[in-house]
Length: 376
Image (cartoon, rainbow, N blue to C red; front, top):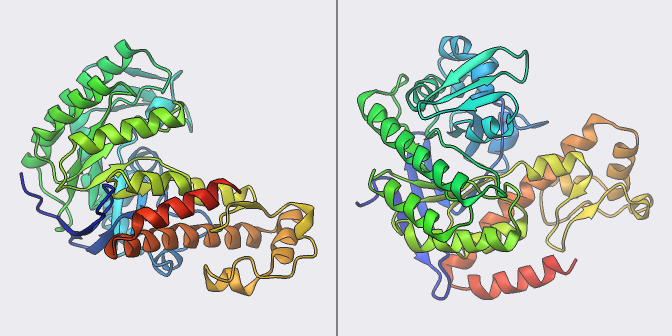
C-alpha cells in the first residue's frame, strides 16, 4: 500500500515528526501544513490573494454549508469552487459530518445516511455516503472528506462503537462510489476516510484497521476536540501514530492551538485546520511566539510598538495602540489586520516546524517553544 501522492523527505530522529510533499493537480504542498478555513468559500476578512500571499497553497471549505449556499447549481454553473472564488490552488472540503453532529436537535442519523433540517430555513435535506461525494465532485475540491458519524467527546463507549461501525460502512460505500465516478473538471480528487472511536484505544484501533483496508491515499483523525479532555485528545493522537500508515498523510481535523499543533506534529500529524486564527482574531486575541495577547487590554492604549515585527508586513506596519483603537471603535479594519496577523503566525509556525524537522532539531525546538509558549 504505497502512497501515490506523499513523499517523506525528512524525519525527526527522536519523535514521529516528519516533513514531506503531497502532490496534487493544483500544485505540490510541503507538510506539515495548516489550512486556513474558508467555510463558505472565503476566509473571513481575507481575499483569495491574501491567502496566497500568506503564503498558503491550500484552504478548507465546507460541503454542508456550500450545499446550502450558494448551492450545487450555482457552483456547477461557475465551473466549480476554484473558479467561483478565483483560487487556482488546493482546496479540501469537509463533508459536513461535524456540522450535522452539531445539529443534534434537527437531524436524524440511520445506517443509510442523515436527514437534517437546514439551520437557515428549516428545510429538510438528506446526505448519504454517495451523495456527499457527488456534491464534492460538483464543488471540485482536491481533497474530499468521507461522510462520517462524529459523536461528542462525552459520549458512551457504546455510542462511539456504533459510530465506528457506521463510519466504516459508509466509508466502504463511499470508496466504491468514488472509484465508480469521475471528476467533473478534469483534476484528480482524493477521497479521505475519517477514523473515529472517541478516546477509546480499542475502538480507535478498530476504526483505523477497517479504514486502512480501503487503501486510501490519506487518512483523517476525526472525533477529537469535541469536548474531551486535552490529555485524552493527545493520547488518542499518539495511538493513531501507532496504527495509521507511516507512508500516507495524516490529517487531524479541527485542531487547534499553536501548542496543539506542535505536540501533534511530534506525533506524526501532517495536516491541520482550525477556525482559531480568524475566530480568535475577531475576539481581539493576537498570537505571538511569546504567547497570545488580548489587544483590547488597556496596557496597549499607548503602546506604539509594532503588533509583531517578525510576522508580516501588516503586523510591522501597524502599532498595538492603533489595533487597540480599531477594536474599541469596532472598525472592520481591526478584524482584517488581526486575522491577517494570526494566519501569518500559523503559517510561519508551520514553516518553522518544517525547517526544524529538516535539520533534525525539532525535538529541542519544540520543547523550548512549548515551555515558553505555555508559560505565558
